[in-house]
Image (cartoon, rainbow, N blue to C red; front, top):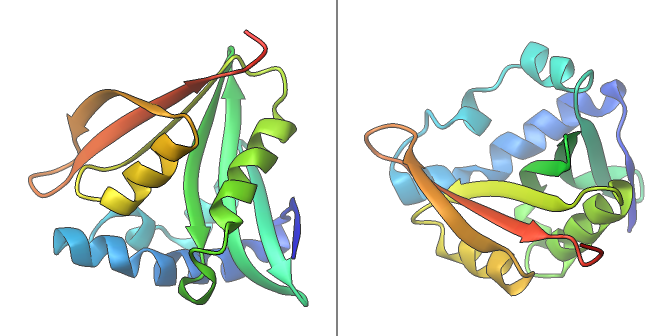
Length: 153
């Protein structure tokens, strides 16, 4: 498996994978209108101008992706996705390490997930992330924000 920076040419394949990977989240909330499922290719392409998009591939096929950007001293991490056939194999943890390596000057890392997403919450907490706030996305979904401080602080 190779983790590297994605290019805009990868946008459609990543968006298709995102829509597949987020089906399980939509099922948890009984809500197929969550932002990862309604994002358009145009919106996805625009993110390449402001975010770093990493991809994981095996034999040229993208099996995962993550997006991140740095603002002030905080690295914001979003849309950690892994193809359902490749989940629970450590790829998500490798993505999180790759983001931290890509943004070595960050003093803090922040991300969010849904409040019913027990697997995600467990995964992020196992990596050292701690919950620091919650907010409502809509009537069905509450977001849980997690943060981790850099070891170099």
